[in-house]
Structure formats: structure tokens, C-alpha cells
Image 1 (cartoon, one colour):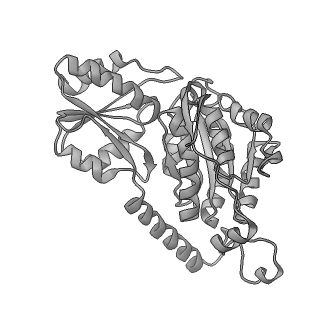
Image 2: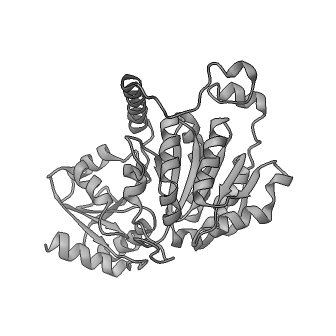
Length: 360
């Protein structure tokens, strides 16, 4: 079952998109995610599955192509890195307001501004809090391995269509560029037009009879109507929070302290656990997999069992705000992070734990 390959994280995303039955990819090259577009161009899936692969003239163009494709019920995706995702924010909020499914991949690099092409996790606020305008949410998945880069493409599409909402894979330059073995899932046939119409009755497919009742828009000039739209969206987000929270607990059963980390930082913390336990420190790792919906209840429950938490991120401290909101004032919660593309070492993380939490 499946197929085992050695691949970069970016390559795994591209291959997974083909196998997931993606109808169209619209993107623009930017380091460190350019391999996604390059792989798709070399694979030429339009010759085998019919998948459209197009390099748009800009990131702004690519997100608006997603709007058009998503509006017809097609499985569409794009990928970029931090500055490119910033350029897409207007289109992203339009898609969220119009309730259109799509998959976005952000292979995060250091910032602000042009910054560096090295890995970072400083786009957490942008992804989770909403970098565009209005009260909207994206489904946000945070992979910690090349295997999850592959798996989350299929999962991202599934959730995007389940909730008619854009989904984002929030990765980073290290996971995008590193090579690991990947167990690729078997190809899923693309939907026929009949299946699309049956599964997406809201989609505009160009049929004349649809024109009177299918309108794809995020605009409602009537305040009461726009409030109704927002209430519907908030009810949908509540469903996500109740049903779609995903997380991983590592050595939490006997833990007196916890690392809380996502993505690459969580991988580093696994080695830090080993080093800390050699010193007699009972520590575990809580890894949010869905950054939205955030595992609020699970962190609140763990906060009643441990003495402190160290939130490890490759940024100035962004997810820590959600951890503190989840845990309340029950325990000490501190942050440790590196900036500008520097990846913290496991030893650094252990020292931070000793200084900020245990001895602080």
C-alpha cells in the first residue's frame, strides 16, 4: 500500500497534491518553497490526471485564481513563503467571507520584511489570528515532518471542503528543505463533474439554471445581512473547535513540566526531553497540530497537573499568548525562542527550562 520515497518536504507537498486529486495549482516562486512549483512543472500532472499547473504573474494573481477555482467547487491550492502570503491576505479574507474551500501552504522564512530565506515560525499570528481584515479564521495545520507535509495535503483538502473554508499548512524553511522517507498514499481519482455537482451544490459550474440562485461573493451592503453572514461563520468556527482539534502528547503521563511547541520546534524539544530526563527532570511535550482550532481545553487540563510550561518557538513569542489564555494563571509559563532563521539547539532549550521555569 502506498509508495516509499526519499523526498524534500516541498516535494512531498507537490506529490501529495497530485495524488489527492487536486484540480489546479496556481503559485509563484519564492525561496524556500519554490520546489513545490518546480516539482509540479516537472511532473506534468496535466498530462496524466488533468491537474492544471500555472505560474501566475504574482502572488496576488494566484490567490484570485484560487478564488475563481474554489468558486466552481474545484480542489485548488497555492503555496508561497512569508512575504508572498502577506500579498495574498486580501484574497484570503475574500475567500473566507465567501466560504470557499482551498489549500494554502506557507513555508515560513525569517522576517520582518524581506528578512532571510532561513526557517522561522514568525507567521503564527498571521495564520492563526487572521492577517487580513474582518472576523475570519483559517484551518491551520502545523507539520513537524516531511511525512506530515504529505499527509496534511489530503487532510487540508478534506477539512477545507467539509467546512467550506480555506485551510493552511504552516510549515517552515527547514521542513520544506529537509529530506526524509515518505510513505505516499495511493492516488485518489479526481472527481467527475457529476460528483462535483452532487458534493458541492453551492458551486457555480456555468449552468444557466444556476444563475438566479448561486452567487459567489463576500459582499453584503446591508448591515443586518452582513451580521447574519458573520454569525454563520462564527457558528462554523465553533463546530471546528468542537470537532477538529488535533494534538500530540509525548511523555506527558508523569511529567512535572511541559514543553509546548509546534512544527520544527517540537522536533527539537523531543531531543531536549531526552537530555532533561537524563538530569532527572520529568518533562514532556505537548504539540499542537491544529494551530486553529487551538487545543485550548487540553492545555487547560494539563496546566492542572504540571508545575510549569516552556513555550518554544522560532519567533519572539506568539503561540505563548494562546497557551497563557488556555492555562490561565494556574502555573508559570515562559517563552524561549530564536530569531532571523536561527534554529535553537536541544541544549539551549534545556538551559532555558532550567533558568526560566525550574530555577526562575
